[in-house]
Image (cartoon, rainbow, N blue to C red):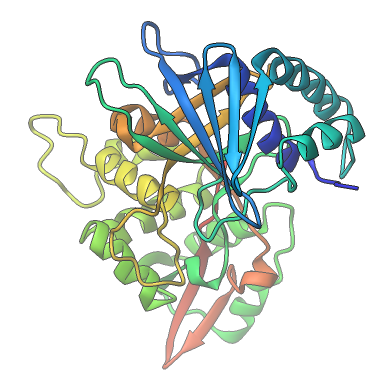
Length: 357
């Protein structure tokens, strides 16, 4: 029997729902449909363990082909199963099974909850773009709001930023006292104590050179920009990416020429978020080549599905900026948040993790 969590069952729901709707709706930064823009779906491709299966839409029939077998299923069956599965996802928690849906899945050769993939692509959809007349095959990763929000950038020692403490040299007892602060907001409180004692955090480098060089590839000043944003996250009440970017724009720590009101920081952070979404990983060399996936399908709490794709670059970037936040990961697991000495100088690490709202 198949069991899965809300996010995993949401992949099957997305398949059924899109086949039932026969169309794909792009979303805006507020996770609402863009008026007067819709993509008719021609077919959906899903990678199963044994083969790729195509679900082609012709009038009110879905033709399923793969392994030289062909089935013809009325679209109304997908509409009914989608509604039933949505109710099951909403009413269950943890991992659970849905026997009626599993039986239907078997009848259409859909044998796994999660599509087999070596990239971030969960599903590929061929649409008809009425503006251009093209029929692009768009790859998507499925993100569900029915379960716990997923991470965009996972924490690790690979995402640590190292800051040098300047302005004052602390003795050993002062270092112990700072590191012993164990309040709920201990990282922030340790930074406050460093500053109260006359110290200041100055960005030195990323802990891992691969991550630092990946950032430089995207933009030569991105390590410094992200370091400022990370420090502000731990030093201010702000956590939403858009708020932190606005704060950085106002402070202009890199002294850009903003005479003509160029939004340098927002533009560069959007590029960073997009590259992370489309394949950049802190532990691997990034070449700038996007994976087969090109965007996200968002399964909303009400069951509607919206798409964000590099095919519509502006909407995709604005969605990422407006719907993510920084959060504090485990400082003990990822080895950050303590004053330490190296070669006679003092340092302090801060970590970057980004999660969807």
